[in-house]
Image (cartoon, rainbow, N blue to C red; front, side, top):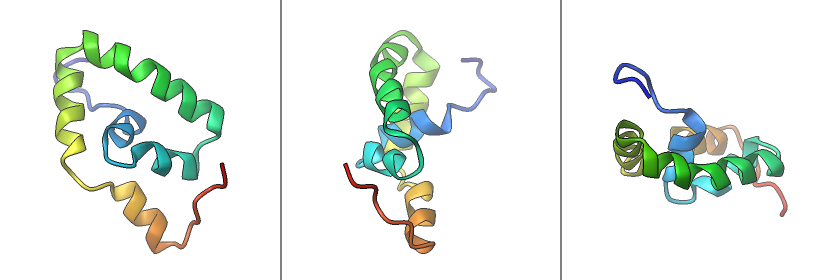
Length: 77
């Protein structure tokens, strides 16, 4: 990750409380599983990415707020 790049929205959402559930509302389960599987490896090896995701974890999910405002239901497991 270059200093001027933003972290991937899906990784930022995954870092938040209930991030996996939020992603499950908009992405296929296989995609959520792949993102969740690779995230720990990426965070462990990338200092700037780790810092960006730690910052993201402290901020409420805008995607979740948007989905709630539009009445998008949670997907059944």
